[in-house]
Length: 285
Image (cartoon, rainbow, N blue to C red):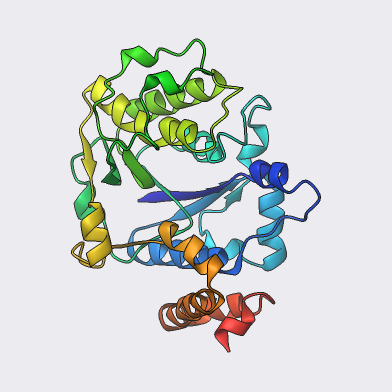
């Protein structure tokens, strides 16, 4: 199964115009685990990024993580994409370049086991459904900055998908979804909310497009199972834990040491190269 990570750095430089590009240590460690565990259990993986991201990974000596290569395809993303509101737009442009069957995988999402048995049948699948919370998934009146996009042509009662992992087995549907999501973003150049617009484009539209096209869409797990372990050890998603780590240095260090220990256990040779990175080496001591 072909998977890909993505990294679009334009949002970083908009937030930090005078800084050199960098990724936090825990993000680098989960990226390594995400890529290497995927390769061991599921297949090949590539990184689709822009040139600043590629140069950064090269400077750290991490390009070996992606056995299928590192491709700066996101250099060609249109300038009119609002990188503040659509900070994860790179994922959608990356997906538009990868034919099905493929898996779109966040760098903070780890698959510990083969998932091929879970992907037998659906046209598309994602890690879990999300509740329609008005603060995150408001009704269409919240998108007043969007012009020329047919918001009222979709079913707003369909539960969105969380796309930290998303599978696309039907190429026609993959193209329809990415074309629709990209059209929405380009119809919203003045989007003024940094959450609702992005999750609509990426997560809610996936479910809406599947419903509209009568595509077979599946959830691979659910939130209770992910939190209490009932998903049988298939997945780990770090997303909700990041802010806790940033607020608690001891928690941060403990997490990074646990990641380093798992890398040493599962990938002893690869971990030697990762441990040479100055900002990561203390966690391997």
